[in-house]
Length: 257
Length: 240
Image 1: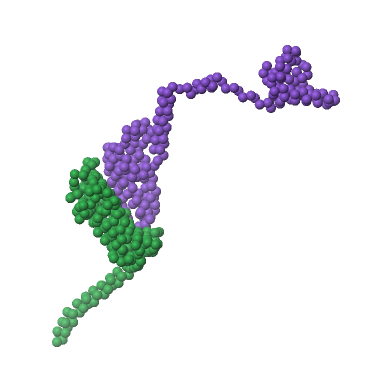
Image 2: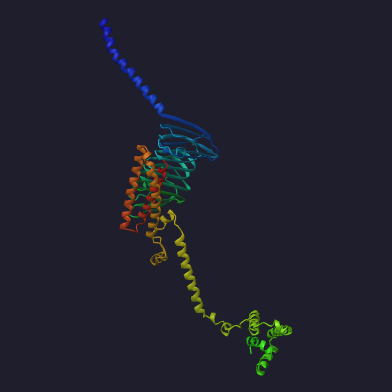
């Protein structure tokens, strides 16, 4: 019995110690993570014509349309935490982290999750980080990244759409409206445009370095490759909308929706 | 005798200092000319008054005084308008033939149009979009002629001018970035450098293409766009 108990102690002791240490380590790490991140949450009532202007420094921004007359902003702030001072002026919600943290070099990433009414105009920007907008049907959707980052625009129905980044991919999945203006521009990356086959637009697609412009089902007799294949111009349907795509060092691909 | 000669002689006439023939001429002119007659009348009354004064009041050089008075009177009299010359009356200066007149009008129209075009082109600063839209193929014969004459900018000159403007802005923002970048974290610095390197590669690539083929409008357009990208990148990061 004594032997057994000694063995039992001898076997169980290290296991218990290990488990205890693991638990302590886990909680210590979690606690450190909790102290390193802060959370910001704010909800604004939104009228009929609401517009969101959001300028981030570094970090991701995800905007999604929902069926509620309010804008909810949730941000996760990495240390050192940035200042966020949203300004609500009439139908405009303006968040500008560059302005609110001017002169501060020690600002951690801020990752936004924003919910807006379906009909809200969305204008988002960041210096570094990914941007994503989905389920928005309004007059304007604009996403701009100064340097690195991907832009994903999904289920967008808007008259004016603009997406521009430095190094990164752009994906647009939406509808080309009559008389609308659509502009996609990247320095290096892939641009994928998924639009309905029956869309009416005039196209200017330029990929001067790679000459990699894949029209897919949109290739027809009204499209012309110019400047040694570096640019494609064409007209689809009535050609009422304008679609300008430029990828200086990357490819352009069209996909039917 | 004209008025001037008459007025010169009036004073002598009044003091009976003229010979008979001259006095007769003066009398004749005074009878015909109202102005000279009035001058003579005024001078006569003045002499009458002067004749009444005592010898003590007579000025030492009466002859010189008379000359001065005479001159003043002459200056006060307005000169008569000069009758128009026979050449002006006939309007010979404007008497151009129809062909000459048409040629003159045509010349004026062409010169003024040319000057207007040159001035408008010289003083209008093109927008970026305008620069992109105006390619070598779009140039009219008129543009080309103006370019050859040095009266309008060629696309190459326009591109060079725009690049200089862009470079000025880039230098400004770059100076601000250099002041700030020491405070950036490693991620920001790496992202900035990576993007700037890609942009600079593109700038040198398009510049080389344009050196080989200055007429390559697409490369010109891309160079313009890449320079704008560089300006925006520097401006955006100068805020951080």
